[in-house]
Length: 203
Image (tube, rainbow, N blue to C red; front, side):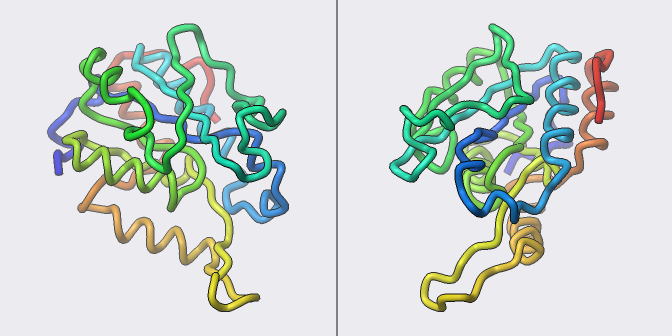
């Protein structure tokens, strides 16, 4: 694994994974764990823009209600307004690499370090972090800029894995193995210091 300390933040890109209205079409939306998700992701978008660093947004499609490409919910959340130079990428896999041309776009921009944000923490976000590390990127997993829901147990109806347990497991599995787990404010400050960016909005 390439360590974050080995790659300057000026070679970073921000990945905003599946922050899409599709999740609001499901009953579980009210059970989400991170009510500061939108504000935290917005702060990172502002920091990366101010630093002149690349940002990529992803939309996930599959047959589930709200995730079909033709669904009115299949769009980025309202707080996100991509600029013309910020690609919106459509994917059909849990990770952001194998069903997209993300790798080529990162190489084109000389990106060697990735900040991972989005939905869901332990699925598309964690899977992307693992793949990115194996591909040779340094990875910042921004835990408080991810979001998830309780996971029902498939063999035990009525039983579920709580969001606190999901976060603990994700942190334990990634930290020092596939990524550095970091908070929004710490990364925003690193970007500011490492790029000389002037923030438009934080929080």
